[in-house]
Amino acid sequence: MKRALALALASAVAFGAATAQAQEKITVWFTKAFYPSEDKALQDAIAKFKAKTGVDVELSLFSPEDIVTKSVSAVEAGTPPDVGFGLTYDFRVTGKWAFEGKLEDITDVIEPLKAQYLEGPLSTTFLMNGKTGKKAYYAAPVELQLMHINYWVDMLQDAGFQESDVPEDWKGFWDFWCDKVQGALRKKGQRVFGVGHPASIQASDTVYSFHMYMNAYNVKVVDDDGKLLLDQGDNKANFAKAIGDYASVVSRGCSPASSVNWGDVDNNLNFANKTTVLTHNATISIAAAQMDAMNKAENTAEQRATAKTNYFEKIRTRAFPNKPDGGKTPQLAAVKTAVIFADAKNKKRAKEFLAFFLTEENLQPYVEGSLGRWVPVTKKAIEAPFWTDGKDPHRAQVIKQLNEGTVYFPFTKNWKFTVVNAENVWGRATARVAKEGVKPDVAAEDAIKRIKEILAQ
Image (cartoon, rainbow, N blue to C red):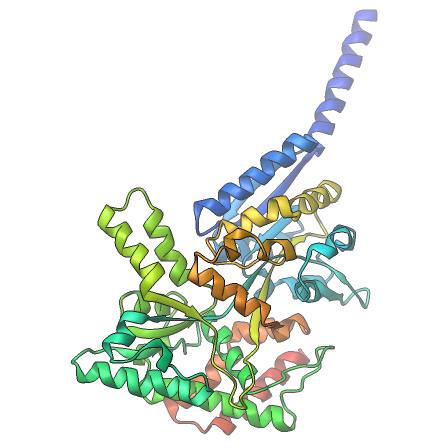
């Protein structure tokens, strides 16, 4: 009997230990990085967390598209991971999930870290819960995305101009690339375009770029409470001007006709192939691709040398020109968000992990691992040598833009604008003007009507 009792007790202890051990695990889903250095920084942070806490981290990496579709399915099924980070969560689902009560309130994670953050990013993650009727921190800022302009210095010089010739006023800037640079290169027999201008309905680049045009025209889409202002007075009139101006780059032949059908990669490809002299892009991925190429061991010495020359000498990164009224065009930022799900199985440990990952020691290497593609959300990180050593022309421009101040997308104030973006109401409006000859004020009126329908749903 004693032996039987001992065996039973041992089994019970073993079962209890196994159960406890099984509980000390969290599942984490992240977007698979563009560069190995990002994934390595994440793996390093996970290893340190395991060593510190003894908690196992089951990590799954997904493409930017797959992580959204898989996360949405898991949330709807009630079986989400504990922690999720998707590069397009902010554009597509974070605000919606918060409103529907599907995210965990992580105010207790954010509050101790508040002092390390730049002013601004946290405001985009203080979100409304439609079930409680109250706002709280339902997401954590991880990194920023900014809009930049890239151009080829050698193509500009081949057209007979210097960088000092580029105007800073709004109309003069675009006319310079459309008419003078493109015109000069065409006279030399080069079938190139002055601007690579994303203008399709399917490209998220169109959404981002058009919002920059709205910012330039002082269009206020919503107020701080998310109430629509786009249909009022100067906002409505300037919205129509922004539509007409954006569409004109395509309709006047300054961008390839195919740009009305481009996917998100096509403006990069046309620029890399030197079909276009200039393009605008929501990250410095164009330059970062050259840095990646110049450091790849599998590339030939000639390929690495060419990439290095492109990165340091031939490709420039800069901000948008001044607004039509002469003021500085605000830098439009998107904050990439990490979340803990309301149905997470191990919220306590999930919060510990997220708090650990968000410390400067772990977050800074992760963001820097993107080779400048993503921008820090913390004060210390933007002062790091990675950005400020003066040796990198592209990163220096990124920090210059960041320090000039940022504004954020309407969906941070009203999550239903994620639906507006998903339909690309903005791209549809500009495409109608560029392709069908619809008047800008008519396109604006129709776009506002559709936006109101979405907001009323």
